[in-house]
Length: 421
Image (cartoon, rainbow, N blue to C red; front, side):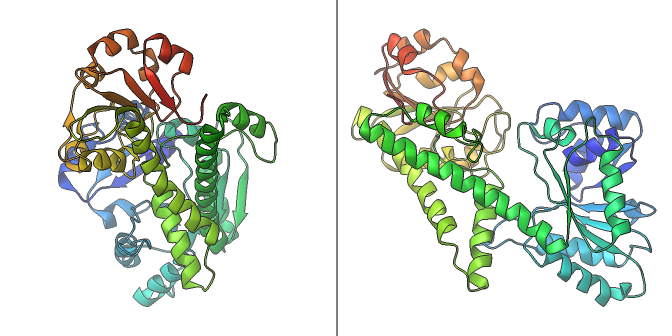
């Protein structure tokens, strides 16, 4: 959605294909089924200008267009490997309708070797005599800041074999970017690997600082001071050195699983990545353990959860650490009231047994402990004095280090955070 609206804003004519009729009707009316700052306005503006439209007919939509961006999901299978069914289904359909000079651009996150397989499908379906190029252009947009990231990319990766096709994709971006961005031009397989390697490294960095926070808590050291000093080293950098309840989202969990599976399939076990995956699972237990440290046995206790989305700025609960943490507390016999500012619609389905409440204030009423699970800045502005007065016991676990221990204790909270003293 962000890519389509962004390209339209650059002045390109963009047609989006959506096969779900209910969702298509939403999109055609200018409503979007997700929360992303600035996106709905961007979509509506470009629809009004006639540069962005939505269709259900793939063959009709691609007719006459120079570049066809494939952005379907590649969710994990039970094995952890990427499910390529939707992508190959699209390619099968495209193979019967693409024409000379068109470029298929794989923006979906795909395993190394996918572009080669796409070329094979195109050839098997009669494209051997037609010049249809395949380009990889992985997406690096952060949920919650995706619109900003699209217009201010840190890098654009373009992988392919045809210099002409690569230049076309470069032009599509360069014509509208307010500032030049680094463009990495490489082959397809390398572009595919860059995406997975990047996410695996980010997961490792987050996993490291989470383990560091636990160690700092054990020895009485403030992890924030340690992380700040580490981040001043340009070889390390300050980004992704904020401890939390574990990484999640729609990308890191599935991409790390595919990365590990790719290594195993090629006889190269990725020991560091497997350890990062295991460490992240332990992080959920650590947060629950912090609650138990304050309230004791969870059976019969009432817990208030602040934040359900995997990060602030989005309503996406895919891979959210809030889900396994709340489920563990429910399994231990606690009752849970939960609130999220974005109001994720699938919260009730994912958290059967929890009560989803309409206000942050509601999670405090009668609670034995509150847990901050998502780093929404709105939570910093809550009337914590009023919240504390509504609780049965003033216990607070801050898994995102949103508050300072001084402020929390000023309101009478027994306060635990990630590695702060």
